[in-house]
Image (cartoon, rainbow, N blue to C red; front, side, top):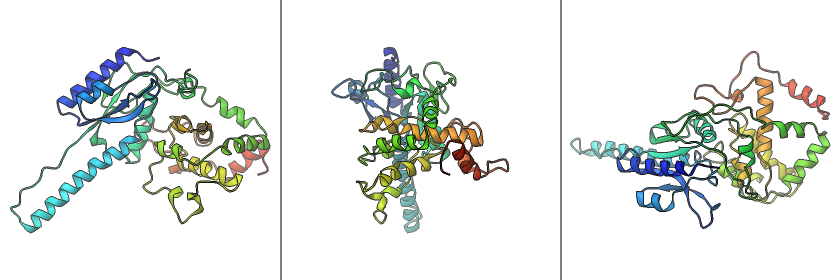
Length: 328
């Protein structure tokens, strides 16, 4: 699915940027024991890149989430140095200043990844000055289970890169995606049928938190599901309601901010189609508040964080649910 020449181009560019000091670390993909066993990783030497860097149809992992931690580490180093310099000056006005460490991380971003990256920049979760973003082409990624084109790539919404410092290859366009077709199929079910569908899916959840940990939109310093004072932190659900509670709350938290990267479904060991919940929210937001794609630019605020006099009234939810055959 991926042109093998692209991998060589990315490798050469990464080594060049490391050698000339433009970046000090590279966020990319590391080879595993098997072809499909590819892991997001950080490289710091040309030798490590030569031995282990890979870019092929198995590199579906979205690297934008990892920048939250990487840039936070860089900013902590900067602020610590500045604080130490200030304290040293207070003790001795003639004390020499320690240079503030300046570090950049090179990250390779596929077109869909740039939407998550842009959304994280809008939320100030990534320090932009600490990142050198390179947009790279993508012809689709494999589903590791079936070996065929993954669902998220089959329903790709865009081949256009949003935010980057450098682009390798040609930029693409927004696509006429069919990503809401499956949501429409679920909407066509009766309320009881939908409830049975999701109850069956959620019943397999083992609360491993992989969906939350991988999600670029889940970046809270303290997650509500890690609060030991609340029942939300328990691993095993006692009722079917609790089984759905975790996923419904998480979907609400990322509504209007989810870039539909599909990582949540991709990492789920029970193969729960979690991306469909987020797509349902995205579809409803588009219908109620107007077309919006999370991460499509740096200026537009998510509909759920803004208010205009033309916004739909709350009772539209009630009216739409009655039309769909719901009780309320």
